[in-house]
Amino acid sequence: MKRISSFLVVAALITGMAGCVSSPAQYDLIILSTEGGKIATLGEGTVACNEGEVVNLVAEPEEGYQFVNWTGDVGDIADVNAATTTITVHDNCSVTANLKKCRKAQPQHLQHRWGVRSHPWRRRVRL
Image (cartoon, rainbow, N blue to C red; front, top):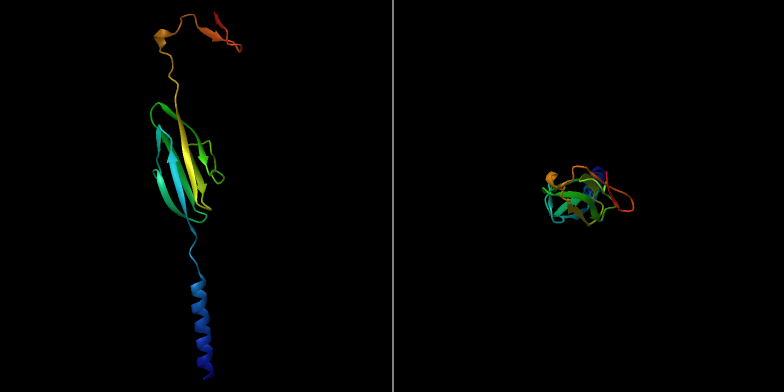
């Protein structure tokens, strides 16, 4: 009888301990971009992530646009100034890839043959 009681106690302890193992916490990561590009890795929207998960972020500018930076909950982003970076998820968070329109270069046929230099005080001088 004593052996059966000991077995039941051990079995109850093992069962109880198995129930104590919990799955990692899940958080929502919201990824957005401004006009002029897209999020290449996961697309825009909400992604469910486990606690401590490292997620790749890749912003792809469209032609005529350039990546500026990541804004929002950026405390866990490896490099906010890189279009390709990672974020470690520790809570619900939202990040945005900011893009801006590139300035157009002046067409070659409109440039002076002599060249023009701009001084710090913004006066133009012909060479």
